Every structure is written in C-alpha cells, then in structure tokens.
Length: 511
Figure 1 (cartoon, rainbow, N blue to C red):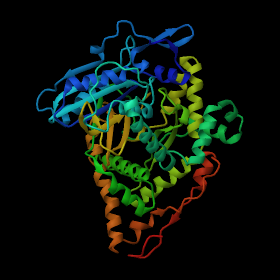
Figure 2: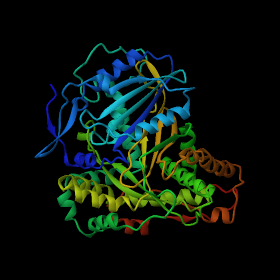
Figure 3: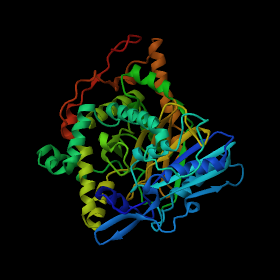
Figure 4: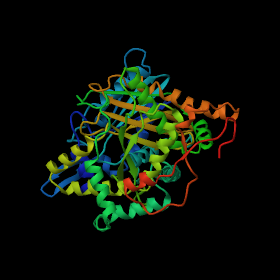
C-alpha cells in the first residue's frame, strides 16, 4: 500500500524552483530498434515503474511542508501515452517533439512523470520520458530507467504488477554495474578522488560541523554566492520558455579513450574541451568576438553514499566550471580544462552547495529564490556528464539503440549541455531556449570536428609531424597525478594546480 511521506528539504528546494520558462523536468529519450511489441513495452514500463511507490504519489502541500501522498484515482493512461509523429518522423521531427515536452510543466495534481511512446520511428519506437527533479536527481533516474531494462532480449515479459523495489530483482546486476561505472567516472573525471569523494560525502552529511571547519568552507560559500559574472555572450539572456533540443550522432568511446590516454588527460577532460570548442565555433560563426571568453557551467556532482545508492531523491552538490571558450588552440584548451578540473577536485564546492540547497529547503521561498537567482546569474549553462552501461540493453524485448537525457535549467539560465555514454558510444546533446539560442543544432554540429582535431594531433605525433612553435607553445601538458590531498578552497586550488609547458622537439615521444 502506498503511504504518505514528508518530502526532504533538498527535494523541496528543487520542487520550488519550477518556473514556466524553466520547468524542473528531467527529459530522457530512448530509441528502440524494431520490431517492437508496443503492448509488451507498455506493460514492462507500467509493471516495473509502478512497483516504486513514488510513481503513484502526488505532491501535497500541508502546514508542515510538502508531502508525497497517494494519488487518488490514479490513471495509467494519463502517464503512458502512444502517438505517431506527422510526416517522415525522422530525427528533426523527434527533436521538435522532445523540445515541446521539455517546455511544459508537469501537473502537480498528479504524479510528476510521464512516458510518450512514439511509434513507427525509424523502424522502431522512441520512448520520451519526463520526471520532475523533485523525484530524484539524474543519477537515480538513470537507475530507474535501467530497472525497466533487461540484459537479455528473451527475458520473461511482465504479467502484472510485482512488489519489487528499486532497482528490481531482475535488474539488480545492471544497477550494480551502473553504480560501479558511476563511481569510476566521479572518482576520475567530473568530481574527486576516492578519498576526497568520501570526505565530501562526510561533510555533506554533517553540514553544521562542515561550516565550523574554518575559512576554506566560508571562502567557498562566499565565492559561489559572489563570484564574478562569466563573459557576456549570446548564451545569456531571458528565456521565454520555448525550448529547442538537438543531439549529435554517437562517437565511438574507445577512440576517445585512446586519444585521452595519449594526451595524458581524462575522457571527461576530452569531452569538456570539445564542448568548449563547439561553443567557440558557434560564437565565431555568428561573428562574435571570442578572445578571452569564459563560459561558466554549473556541474552536478554525485555525493551519494553507498547506503543512498539505490534511493530516490537528490544527493548531489554543484561545482562551477569555467570553460575556456576563448582559447583557440585545441591542445591548449584541453590542458586548461584538465588544470581546472584538477583544481575543482580539491575544492569544497560540492558539499557546500549540497548543504546550501538543503538549508534552503527549510527557508521561506522568497529567500531561496533570491539566493538561487544570485548564483544562477553568474552562469550560462547547466552541464551533466552521465555514464551509462557499456553493454547492450533491451526494453520490452527490443534493443536500445541510442539514449539521451537532459537536466533542467533554472532561473535565467537558457542552455543545458548533456554528455552521455552508452554501449561503447558517447554523444553530446543540447537543450536551449528559443529566445536565446534558437538553433542548438548549429552548436552540436561542431562537436565531432572538435574531437577530430585532437585525434589529428595524436596521429601527427605518432608519425612525428606535430607542428611546433606557436601552435604547441600554448599547450600545458599535465604532470602525473599525485595522491589525493585534503580539499582546499577554489582559489588556493587554482593557484596550486600543476601545469607544465610543453617544450619537446618534433617527433619526440610525450613524457
């Protein structure tokens, strides 16, 4: 039986951030190869999703705060819908449909999720899912989506509602594999080392003690709330709520791994550098000045403890990453991204922001709005990097061909950047507001070529033809990684981030 439960303060914060121009809706797209048994697909989604009580609850406001309460007269037809797109139903048509859904708020009178099964899409089915951010963060919701899938196309079809709990008996191994890949990414890419990650989790669980730890935490909080504006570019503006969505064709993940290894950077550094290059190319194509441009992106950082790993809800902090969009040389840009990411790994930002978001859940909404507006005015984008499973998956007996997802923006932030890897491929997606960036496809069109430039440098290095002089002079090759140290303030981390100017001769091996 579904019972009422009080919403946590951090989930309350994300619930109250919902705005008509920026709905707090996480959107995912799963493309299935044909043939697809749509009846079985629908039964699979219903059987496995509704086994989790949250998806049969709606939000109710009481004198004591917000509660998750059983939804009266729950109707599955309201939440799982079938449709067909007009015309040829290709990628452009699907992108427009996804953009329309991303522009719409979810109805608070009902459970905050829905699925749209787009039939006859490129010989298969496209599944478009929407979840309110108050239900869970992106890490948990990827786990929810995994719980709908099987590793075997011949897995038994559902026959009715079961009493499994997240992530579901049939999918527990998938969930555990996914957690392993998540921890690998956040320990080596987007977040911190294993030691620092545990320190961050401990601080997030003890916000009062963390705030008493001294100047570093206070300085981090002051920096977040009063950091200077990033560059004034066309990526900033007032959104009107009409979203635009675009995504790239996948790139083979093994190629990215090889190039990143040769260049001495993480896969994440490579992808972020390619994003920065794509944004630069877009500005240059519009005739805008690019020299010295910095685009700040707010990046969610997973802070889930092992005990929270299979729970819904929001357990993440935020770091502010400045992308060196103004740097023209691809290698220089890559190594600068690497330097900045290393500095972020040694900062308090993630646990400090989680503590701040939690505290705002207790505060009056007007205080929350003012503080978040202050923070969001300093950024131009929200960016996520989500690692999916690297093995084939099946939904309703049909193989998943491609997966993409986007987190919502907030305040006046009008651009959401998503990097997602799945089944040996990685791709880049963008959601924007039409009033600010009406043509996101023009941005993502540069992503593959930016990666290919780095591949070119690697190939030329192997053949002894790396250009010398000014082309390489900017690039700062990273030094070998050292043992994790105690996190410090962002300013101290940036000042101490190790870099070394490259000075080798043509054709000589990298050190």
